[in-house]
Amino acid sequence: MKLLIVIPRQSRTTGNHVTASRFAGRLRQLGWDIRRVETDPQDPTPIVAELRQQRPNLALLLHAWRSGRPWLQVPAVDRVPFAVLMTGTDINRDLDIPDRAAIIRQVHQQAATVIVQNRIAFEQLHKKDLPWLDKLRLLPPGIELGADDFPLRERLQLGSKDLLLLHPASIRPVKGNLELLRMSAAIFRSGRPVCLAFCGPILDHSYGAAFIAALKDHPRARYLGEIPCAAMPSAMRQADLVLNNSVSEGVANALVEAATIGRPILARDIPGNRAVVRPGHNGLLYTDDDEFQRLALKLLDDAELRRILSRPDPHSYAAETEGRQLAAILAAIMAGSAIPGDRTGDGDTPAKPC
Image 1 (cartoon, rainbow, N blue to C red):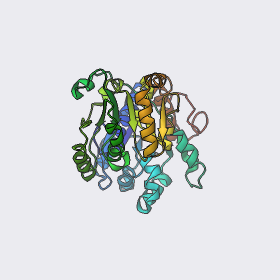
Image 2: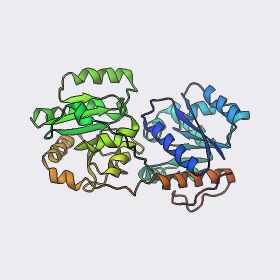
Image 3: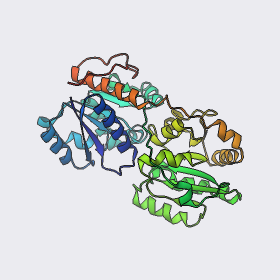
Image 4: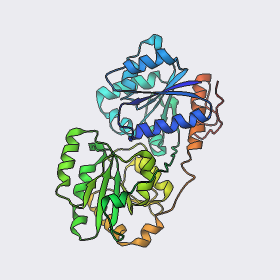
């Protein structure tokens, strides 16, 4: 069976690329023929070219607006059945922007299946009067850990007593990088041996310029650029805390990685983060600047608490399970039948490729 995965044109270290790579790898192991194409909201040309050249049986769109808008511009003669995976930006922002919401509604109307990976978002969507709820499916997230080494503490020139806070996220307003830097000023002034490191691609250039300029006022904060996906587990293992200050998330791959390898998390209390962070078990959640500062200082001062929150969880986010469930969803689209199991994403019957 041939599947075309459509993703927004972004850096290869972004969540969309990481997720698409994981999907493609697992589906190939199940016998699927996978192609990927990158696009932007204005240009359907790359999608049309792949559809005409490869003639896939169906497509999977990652991001209902960024991938969905160019998909709607594809000529009807070239269309194939498709599913769409809703991102955190789709759910938490784009559905509230009228012109984007109109595009998303068209995508949902035409899609065979609408997929979300956040159980909390899945439950919240079911409370709304949405005409496409009968198409909604939950696909619990998986993760694949890279094995490359990354000399993070060496690169930052940190000593054994220095405490490292790592914020792995692209540089753009929704991720709150600049705001996190400002929130951390009080921690820097406390005199504790703390280093705050940011890593991820700059996706918003004006915001990124303001962020880089602000770093000059904080010598204990550093921007590392992009860390290769295969080296992220190595980098995280060297951090004392993994941070997330996003105002919107679907399910952050970085937090899933941190939870899997057992690095304590301090994250903003939003639905996307609550789906991963279990307070007192693998991290803590904060609601405002003051609570962030209080909890950060508490964690920095309490090595035993950090140890308690460092519980590796290699089983909750198995990529194998995610791949089998995705294959079942896609095969059901092709068969025109109900998804094996129920509609909560718990059906775990591997799909046989054609």
